[in-house]
Amino acid sequence: MEEDYLPGIYVQFLERFPEVAEAQGALARTIRERNPFDDRTDRLIKLAMAIGAEAEGAVRSNVRKAMAHGASLDEVRAVALAAITTCGFPTAIAALNWIEDVTAAAADS
Image 1 (cartoon, rainbow, N blue to C red):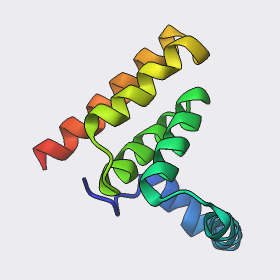
Image 2 (image 1 turned 135 degrees about the vertical axis):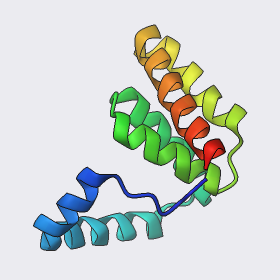
Image 3 (image 1 turned 180 degrees about the vertical axis):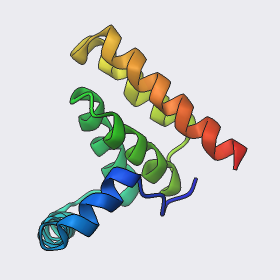
C-alpha cells in the first residue's frame, strides 16, 4: 500500500487553503496524541466512521492507511461487512467496492 498517496482534490485543498489545512492538521495531531488506540486500530475505527458516512475518499484513504499500519484485507473487509446491520446493505456494498478498488490498484502498482 502506498501510504503517501494524495488525491488530486486534497492537493488542491492544500494549495488553495494552506492555513485551513494547517489548522485541520494541528487538530488531527492533537486528537491523535490523546488517542489510546494503536495506529492500526485507530485506522480501522476511522474506516468504520468513513463507511458509515458514505465518504468514498475517506474510505479509500483509510483502507490504504489501515493496511499500511498492519491491518489485513480480511480485517478491512470485516469492517465493511459490519456496516450491513448498522448502516445498511447498500452502504456496505459500496464500501466493499471501494476497498476492492484500492487493493486492486495497490496490487497493480
